[in-house]
Length: 141
Image (tube, rainbow, N blue to C red):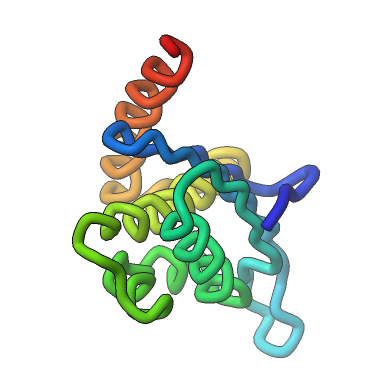
């Protein structure tokens, strides 16, 4: 949990139904043994229920040390299973954590001037719309 100063990528996500908000920070580095670029560090700041906090924590464990490509394969079902299951009403929390990782990777790729895969670009557009809706609701109160 926490924040990474000078993060290589930052993802901001939210859920309009419950009002949960999350920021994911990633630091990218090289794996010395294989020479591949990996997610060297990842931290989250979560404003939400215990399920959102648990799934965001599990997500950090699941992607740390993984390549960008491996991290993009993270699924909400995988996160749900990592925390030992979730009630159906809380399943959206696992989606939030997965979306946060996608957004942090998207931000990293854009900042680094690298190509963004088409499916990640589409996910970013969807996630951005949701975040704007959540922020509008939060600021209205």
